[in-house]
Amino acid sequence: MDLNEVYKKLDLPMSISKDTKLKDIKNIIPDFEVEGAREKLR
Image (cartoon, rainbow, N blue to C red):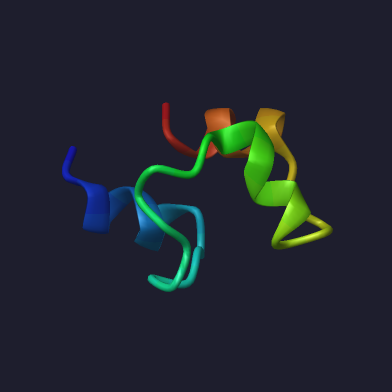
């Protein structure tokens, strides 16, 4: 799965750096949940 597909599945804006760790996305998007993201990517 390429990075664009990951961003699309997780509804993430492309402005979030590709180097941002999943656990740190909640600092940018307050309602982001790592566990929910993992489920969406399965």
